[in-house]
Length: 516
Length: 115
Image 1 (cartoon, each protein chain N blue to C red):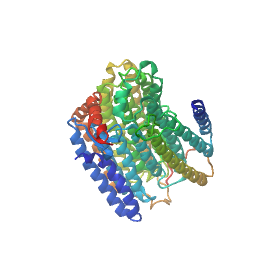
Image 2: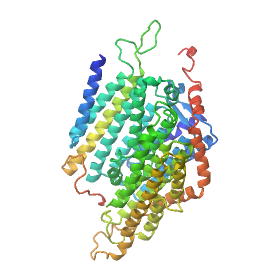
Image 3: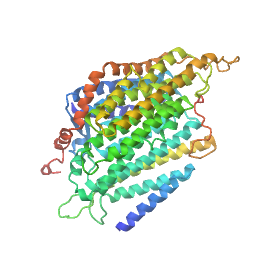
Image 4: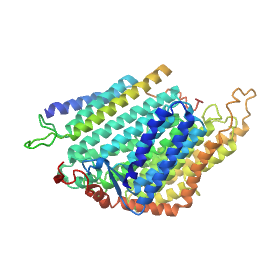
């Protein structure tokens, strides 16, 4: 039954070429297969999550080659949780793309969407750093295609910036991998975790360099200040369903930081001690502040949401950079929340966009379907700004609680609380301009775009409502969720079983006497 | 040999970073390509530089070249080549569409227009 672990990677990898080859000109068939694939992914992810929930770590050796020689795919609590989050998010994003007919405005949306899922799933499941790089590239190259889906000058220009920035990130990743390999002679994470502890403390320059480079790469992915410049314009210009799916991509960076810096370069490792508190925490606090100030300062609705994403990533990174079991629990809770809330907000931007000439935050005539759209925006903004009763509030409480024992409690509390206030002001300003002032603005007499101005499709509302109801569920079942995530962080801070599973499972080459 | 390889990597990286900081897409893409060349050589050197060592285990051979970096470099070359092709296409599209190949945002961002 261990073959199920690669299923989240293999299924989209097979489905995408099938969609290109067999259903190229039939958008209906593409939609059916794409949705069926994502539903199957959810089922597989649920199975894997259930299997991992009691703490079992399951290993899949590709080609039956034993680690560290072969490539391994590992399913533990953290991986399966992220796989589940991705597949659930993908379902609602896909429903929105179908409902709003974004998928029909360019070619190959569904194929690229599946390739993107393959990359994300692979990044979550792999147990090998070079393989992580490869899956990063898979998800990036699919995202380049999705980013410029449906074309347009502004989008292409933002696409160039996005691709260039990420190419630079990939190059840095390779430099980091090269230095790690030169220092330790392995790229398997479990093997690496054992070898870095054996390095002579006097000769750690190379490993330190590699650890910092790797942190930089993941910080680019997670859009931590000052490496966030690619995010606002590319997320604002990307098609709405794509931007909503990208909400999980920043979390891939956060996941990689959690994975590598709990297992390989753990906080108590002498070689890289102080890296998190010295560098990561201030950067995370700065990105939290800049993100929330950006919400208040943005002149366009889509940029506002992009800055909200930066701010919420800042919150996640603040919690991660404390590197205690409680703070990782809080970070994971907030990650799930911020993915769902960010995706919902991007979809709401598109609901608003469909009825307006532009997304400037100025009073313009009422958008079609404004009642429902504004209600959804209200809920999503409450969640994102971290007001009670939704999960953003609980997440923030968890983060503040985890920061209580830290040496920089005052800084964290001050910035988290003040930035929340700024976000509330920013969101209320945006909401009142978009929806309330619109009442006072009369519609133009001669409405030339009347046939365009239909209310968004029901399926679009179902998708956004689904994401918001997941947020509600995340709030109502916060108890079980945090218990599960406490389990996740316990497993992360006790990497010995993971390492033993990866390195001691027999396979080809594990004993030299087999004759290979 | 170490000095030669190391300085080659350094020069390539320096040139790449300089070109990458330019304002137009063409030099930036050239800079990215130079950087990927630099990283390919760097990866190659991460398995230690050696001459004439066989990469496959055989009886009677004492001295081996590390085969793994060669495989890594191959992967990296393929990926960076593909990525460069993609960015050239997207940059061409942006240039032909807007008649302007600056990397920066235009002075008046045109976000939010119905596309």
